[in-house]
Image (cartoon, rainbow, N blue to C red; front, top):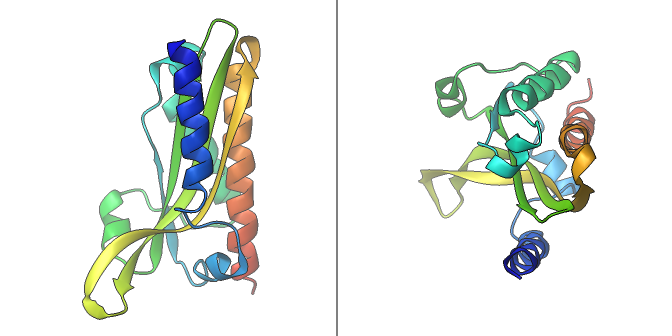
Length: 168
């Protein structure tokens, strides 16, 4: 019963969260224009996801390789990102709820940027300006490859948005 309740909460939060985040719309794509570099941060993974063979370092490497191959400048240090108003943080988060035969997985790929508050330009804060997320139910034998592929699908959505906003 606990797993069913947890799954319901995860699905509800995902649907509710859709309106709280940026998204992949024309106005959110416009926020990607002129970014000079991206810092990638993969959140620590749930133990259930790690037990299925998904590795945080491998996800980080997969995402960075995909960005690099698309010509995006990667920032290696978090302070590089924090010191510039012309860079972004590509945030990757994978959450899960597992039962005996399957796992509900919530994947979020979002770009966070330092922004100025319009009513008071002295206030700088971090905000999600673009995002793509998904909740899916996966069978246990395929979880590792499915999670990696799903994360990369959302990274590809980001790349499409980024490249369309930064056409030369």
